Image (cartoon, rainbow, N blue to C red; front, side, top):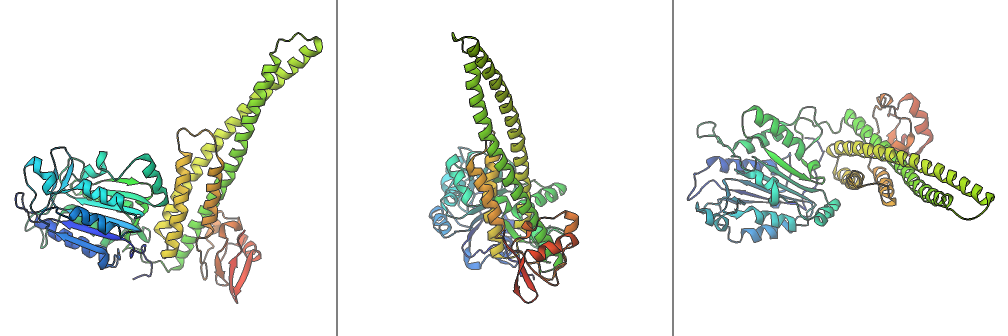
Amino acid sequence: MTDWLVPDLSNSYAVLVGTAQYDEFPQIPAAANSLDRMFRLLTGELCTWPTQRVTVVRDAHEPGSLPDRLVELYEQAKDVALFYFVGHGLLDDEDALCLGLRGTRENLFRRATTALSYNAVRRALRASPARTKIVILDCCFAGKAAHGHQTLNGPVQEVAGLVHGTGAYTLAATSPYGSAWFESEGESDAVQTYFTKYLVDTVERGVPGGPVGLTIESIFLRLVEELTAAGRPSPTRLSLDLADTFVFALNAANQAKASPEWKAGWIETIARAREIAWALFVVLTQVLGGTFTAASLGRVGSRLEADGNDTGTGGILDRTRRGVRRRIGDAMGARAGEVRSKRDSGLDRARSLADDLDDALVVARANAADHDTARAADRVRAVAHALTGFLHNPGLTQVTEVMRTSARDVTTALNQVPMDATETDLSGLAEAGFTDVRAFAGTKWSEGTIWPPGLEEKIRQSSDTLEPGVYQVRET
């Protein structure tokens, strides 16, 4: 097994709830096996959850103190709070989702009081200080948690606060009014619910050719493809902020973190992100300057044009001055229009660069080498994601200094992401067109590192010796 690590989960908490036995509803033997399999997956070598940070609630008879217990448990989560349920999903008399427990009553008006209300789960998660909140529901009507008022979404000001975290992700086995299916007795030695079976199978099998870590979004997309092809209900999901990039598990089909090929790919990814971030900073700087120019030209032009239209009682000299002012005002107004056009073009370019940067950072996060690298990548993307949101605001008409500062912060944070090129063949970077040494600032390399011919001399001239045969590219 590789030494690549998913995020450190010692400050996280997961609660798995499963109900297979019911007093007033059909039994679901498959739910018990799915619950066990999900626990083994989370605490196994692919997901690496510490067993003491995972609580299993099996065949609870009634909600009792369970809602309060969820609040208490999720208060312990600083990084990730995860909730999983498998069993009967029910709707109460107000069309709200309820998670069936053993003693849940069939009477429509008593479901909310005898089942675990999904609103109670939602409330506990929203109260948690965890940076990332994950909900996985394997039950009928599970899609209700990913649509409408029962999502983990909140008021605008609350969602804005998630910029400092990584958001929330709800993965549901069905659509809002769909049914979840399970295997029948005799279909397999240990019958399971289809959704959990396919989810665990996907993680345990891995994605050949995929990144080192499987994000929850990549798992969802794989589930949609495989469940649909098998004629099973298609899952749904809702992602807020950056939660779609949460690395749920190690990719069992890609355990080559320590290989030279992996190191070369990692360095190219970060170097490319640095180039994009720097270009974004430059474009925003230019647009910011152009915004001020357009505003000032427009104001002065309007004032001169107004002066030129003044019908004073002066003589020929005054009329001549007014004519000159009018013509200058017209010219400055036209110039302001040109600047505004360039500004709009610059904003479009900035938005495109921000999207490219976001894509590069998603790839980087999924291939992070260790806890420190993963956290560094998370910090970079949190700032970049907020900046992208600003730039894509439909009401945006001009760049602010805050945006330019955010772009500079992204470049600074990217320079702090570790890059180790010792004993690595980087000759393939020639095809990627890298020519600026700044993209490799802070990179550690050795005499065994193979640089592209056009870059090697620049790298040597821009590096300091750490120890005999080992060097580091200077920060710029």
